[in-house]
Image (tube, rainbow, N blue to C red; front, side):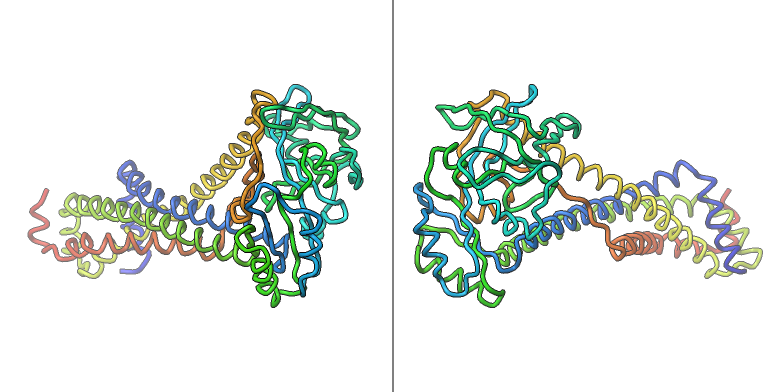
Length: 429
């Protein structure tokens, strides 16, 4: 008996019991799809965080204050005097509500000198349209890509170069000002500051709009990676508990630990679904053995060995695992992209929908550096944008695991079938 005969006899029973076969395969599909979808999600989020941190660079040190007074020009000068510091960039961050063409959009206000924007965006500050704002007190602004192309309008442009938009700034006493739009940024995705959902302007213009005279975030750059720790420790020694200091390396380590724990938990959950599938496969194949007892007796009387019968049922289990694995990959990929789109769309909608009541919906913006860095969101929120990441090893492993689980589940039914005696099997009708 050759391999073709074994495969044909295995496949023949599966095609004759189409509904039962389909239900058995579905159990495997669910397990594999869960693994593919969940692993690709965590890999995609991890990649987005890493890309965001890479834009800042490994020598970056973020400093925020725990006091309400913020940082002054004197603080900037003192931080600049620390050895091994190559640059110190003060940033003003606040919140507001943009009123444009009937759309109320919550936005983050980012005040930073235009020449320092490259430091925030990793030497990658580029405009989609228009020109960069000037370093003056006049509130000319550059809009983030998601502000100009909001998800609430299905990505259609809502802001245009040369347009004057109405901006509501403040909490209980809201100020309403008109700001000219001079440029629109390229899309940057999730960053330490939510550039896509922000209005960028000079620091002095942001101070004027927010009625403050201090900075609430400072981005420092060490001269090289080996001096990052020294710069961070020296800053902490100078200011003590009045500041929070965190490096991009620390953020990455924390993010990887959190994502790794979540990924392990999700894989265990997906593994449970495969275990359930294994029990289902074993049950279905035992039923198939009982149903084919008479057929097994005929095959043995024709000269089939026990090993041949064993192989027929083992190959049948492998076919179920292989088909379930392949279908599960495509279903898991589709579910993963759908989930990523849903999360990104929901997060964008919540960002633009937080201002349903106009300026009264504006909240305060001061936060800690660690929270700002890990969440990557501004005071008014930030859209979480990422794409699932599918590695060839994950895809192959999912199929192999599905086949192994199916094979293990089929061992006992196959063994039972191979041990049937021809005379006793032929008596079963």
